[in-house]
Length: 429
Ligand code: UD1
Image (cartoon, rainbow, N blue to C red; front, side, top):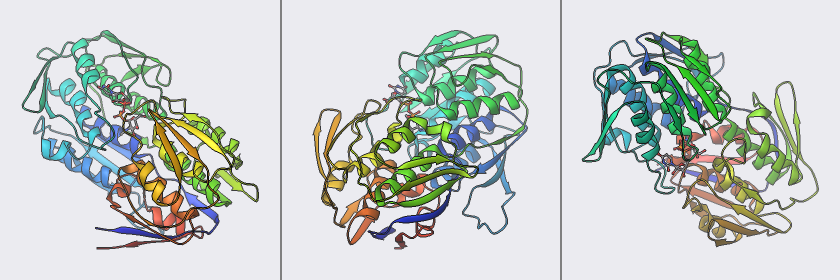
């Protein structure tokens, strides 16, 4: 198993290109199931999760081809990929595939809407809480589907096409909003989704559906209206820049000090996180190329954060922010409201010398003046990158084990960081 070796202590300076967003690319790829035309997605990141979903879609009959590689870029960088679901050959998404990535459960929406049936295994994914699927089931039932859960599979049927309806999400869910938007696009009549997720990835998917001929309005607000159409066609859509990758590298610079331009990053996608990073003492400046992050001299100020659905502080940046706060000049409180059990990085950060105590869903971080490198274990995608950030600021050598978590969501992490002066390398085997 690969490991990442970091020798901490260097400031970061230079440019880091921001990749296409994993969490936007996945639902856009799944939307290709809605049409027999070709969906061309630009800026698709080269990540383990994208490859895994490509395999799952292939199982349903989706062909794909890659083009548009940019000059001087290796195949490991974001690229343009065409997905064509001319014929759906199988409406079952099996356990062996779905258990590896929770988002693959989302194929249930388009398969049901286009084929009138779907049999999808209950999902797996990161070990960060129970992550049920009740909202998907409720919402699809509201659109007229009949749903049974049998032997670990959700079996959804809609004999005479889904019907538009009003559905109020009892809880904000990104995935369930994606799925109901896709399903309602091919339903008969109008659907109104209330208390919908407002994440930028939802807007990216709505734009994609509209480019395919759907009638979706209100995405980005909590009420989304979808006027169902009989069929959708192919389209060409660009994946938005990854706001979590952007925030992660911004926090890395805030922690190590230095001066980095995050190329292609869009401030609007993560304003709440940028505001918090600025409060810690870093200087954040939007530029023509992206976002410039600088921190010189002064220490890191402690800041309290509570995670919340967009436009609040993202849960996907909570672990990284905790990494940053371990070296703040004072105490900070970090409260997680989206997922239970999303503090697995706490004990690993403690191995580097961090002082953190847990009280329910709040972590109290008492900043220390220095961290010391140590072997640590990556436990999930975002937790593992918090260890990388901390390792960059720690004295001496940090070895991050179980790097496959990082490969699910961060494109060329070690290359991007070493390009800015970090001592970081992958050790294979
Ligand atoms: C997506 C993101 C993930 C991010 C999360 C929250 C992708 C691929 N993943 O995950 O990186 O951390 O949004 O921003 O985009 N819930 C239920 N019942 C359901 C569905 C969800 O109770 O049927 C709960 C979850 O357990 C959680 C909360 O709702 O407590 C929010 O989850 P949700 O927004 O659905 O997360 P994902 O879409 O899985």
